[in-house]
Image 1 (cartoon, rainbow, N blue to C red):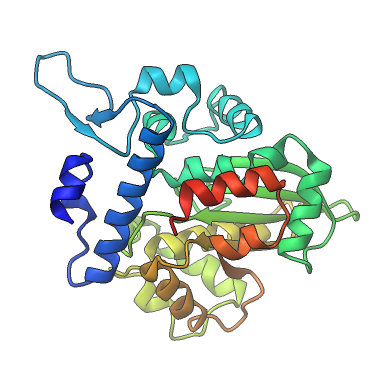
Image 2: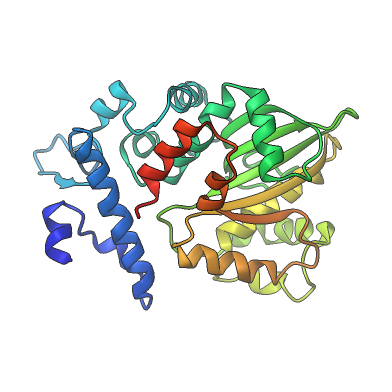
Length: 314
């Protein structure tokens, strides 16, 4: 296997997950599959770093990447015209204080934010289709879809929200019909693993305030989440959703944070199952496999077929 991966420029030390060989195998398999997808379509190979240095230091080829200039010119990382148009629209504007990796969006075939555009780009171009899709995936969602957002935060570094840089890969905005809105915030996980991290200590008080006010968590759950834990990103993005529902404007009356992942990603599957156990009220959190999302038939058939071929090796 190592020789096969090396021949495809897919043997990356970063794919190894300590103590979890199943997850390591998954990450290597996904990288190799993306390299095969690229080669089958005649796209040139990219590198590490994505933009080679000008100091003469040689870059090394990476099979799961595209050359940045080629990727920007062709939009090869995006599967449909809707996905490409949504990516170009999003990268043409900047939300306040955003942290956005433009290079990986265009050139990294494993990049989950790019998968978000591939999943939902067609919906951004057709809000009627988006509304049907949202109510297929989440039948209890109220209202009508009026916007599809990408790499979005309602307010980075804004103490009225979470006072952090966290954002969601995608978000569906719903008109509830009573002057308020709902939001479905989506976190896409493809190649990611459960890497432990610590929430910013200086934001401890705000994190606790949002968590306690929400009533979503068991009383014993929040203290461990403040330390080093694999739930760090999931918790903070869920808290961002909860802070939106608590905003002083009362503009948001319903919301849910949703994690989407391939079924073979055992780390994310395990995290979602364990995270539910921390919740006293599960109404603002859910998860869905990428396979189930595609099997629901909410996306155009051609898009669904392209997504399966690209992201779900048999």
